[in-house]
Image (cartoon, rainbow over all chains, first blue to last red; front, top):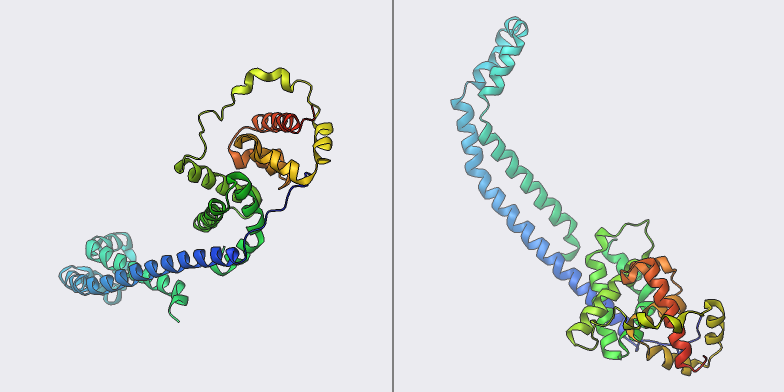
Length: 122
Length: 170
């Protein structure tokens, strides 16, 4: 609409701005990579005692006994499937199982984050 | 937006943002800082940008906020009187015919017009430049400056009248 004196940036400013943004992107990517690798390693280390606890909890519970009934006394299980089902669920070591699943989820998240940011590793 | 696409985005909008920053700040070094900070902020908030929305108002809004923050820190402009004190001068603007005024002003010589626009208070200058140089609609300008549509139209009308006065056209 109005014809004004043109304004042009000095030579090299565009490249400087692009470079500044790319630097920020790289710093952010490196930070995400560090966090995800640290969290991944921590989750693997934490899995050891949690899985051990899960195995022990399963051994101590009656879950194996109820599950064995499904194969040894199928007719009884079918006629009382609601009671057997409830017993199976109640005998699950919920806390250890939840902890294990949560740590596995955290580990998978860290793997995903590392793979998304792996163009930093060249 | 993917990171590798962003440099293309910067190149596409760089000239317009630099022009806006320079006319706003009237200083090359400040304008360069504003431009760089604008695109860094744009990258940071690119995840929240809805792709079906127009880019220009969103990007100019970031530039506007960046420019104001920057100049506030340097105390280059005082915003206490941005709510204009020429509200009482309605008579000055009562007879403004926008189209005729735009045509008259547009015939002015380039350097004279540029100097006159750059001498205007920032709230008029910004609206005039977004409309006349960047060709944004009033609705888009309202998004950029964060003011109601009627306020933007009023600022534009008053800015034109003030510009005409500065150019001794009235």
